[in-house]
Every structure is written in structure tokens, then in C-alpha cells.
Image 1 (cartoon, rainbow, N blue to C red):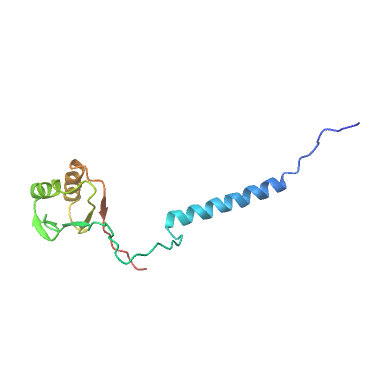
Image 2: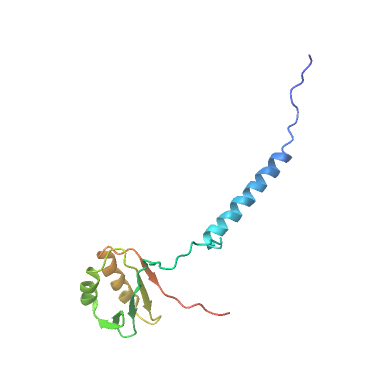
Amino acid sequence: MDEEPIAALNVIPFVDIMLVLLTIVLTTASFIATGRIPVALPQTAHAETGQQKNRTIELAVGGAIYFDGEPVNKDTLAEKAKDLPQETSFLIRADRAIQFQQFIDVTDVLKQLKFTKVAVQTQNTAR
């Protein structure tokens, strides 16, 4: 039996399979990242959402701080926030004209109290 070694390997089918797998991975990754995968959640008549309301911290021009609409200072904010559960989420609404240090002071208070669910509200610009 005269068997010759394989002189050339046809890699085109292998490349085709890899491109298909790459396309599937990239498509799935973009669906997961943007949250566009439709999910039909089960329904019930009497459901408790268990969702806590965001606590709002507003930073106004001139140094005013409002916690859930009530004017406070940095120390009062720390006193009120320390009684809240650790999983409480905060929404910071800051005027764009405030000093950056004021924003850092408020986020530092939340960090010292070990809160991790903090979001900053922004406004979408229409183009």
C-alpha cells in the first residue's frame, strides 16, 4: 500500500464553521448586553414586586442638597442614610453647573456607609 502523506489540507470548511460560530457568539452577546431578548414573565393576580423605591439625592446650584425633596446638609444626609438597609438604591440628580467637589462629597458619604446601588440621572440630548 502506497500511502502518500497529505500534501495539502483544505481549511475552507473549518473557516466557514468558525465564522458561523463567531457570528452566533457576537449576536448573542449583543442581545445580552442590550437586554433585547424578549422574556414572557409569569403573571399573578396578587404579586408583591419587592422593589424598593429609589431614594433621591438632588444637588442644586449654590450647594443645596435635597434628600427625597427635603433640604439637608452633608452631615444630616449621613444620619438619615445610615438607618437605611444596605440594598437601598440611590438616584443622584445633580445640576450640571455644580462644583464637582459637591458631587464627590455626597458620593463619599454613600461610600462610607457601604451603599453600592448608586445611579446618576442624566438627560438624553436629541440630535
